[in-house]
Image 1 (tube, rainbow, N blue to C red):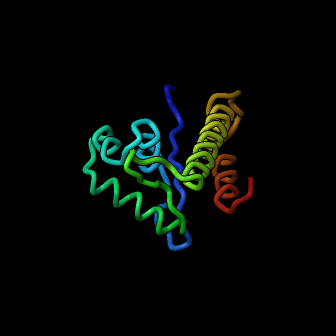
Image 2 (cartoon, rainbow, N blue to C red; image 1 turned 45 degrees about the horizontal axis):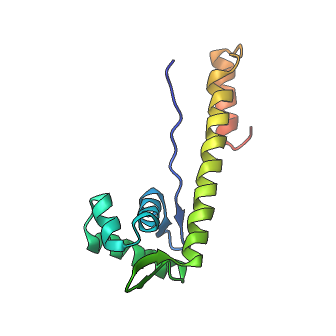
Amino acid sequence: MGLKVRSKIWIENEKGELVIGTGRLRILEAIIEVGSINKAAQKLKQPFRAVWGKIRATETRCGFKLVETTNEGSKLTREGLELLWAYTRLRNRCERYADQQFKELFGGEKRSITAENCLDEFSQLKAGKE
């Protein structure tokens, strides 16, 4: 069949504002790699102002600093590293679970099901009954 499951995981605050997702993950990883917000922005081919704005917005939404800047450059704070670590673990776990469920639901043994049974099962699923 050639199908593949895809998912995106992000974290929002109580107001529904983005805290961290794939884009911010890439920014934080780039800062670790190159040691500078400016160089991270260049590496990601994004304007410095946009990268800086995303960092500041996330810091405001989290209530703690993600990045500290000195004369030597920039690095993630302990809290920034913890956020990066926890988000990466969550994303990896969700991807593994989605892959497992996809394989089970789309790649396993085919069940014998009639159109009528299918509609009944679909109605139960919509109602939150599995």
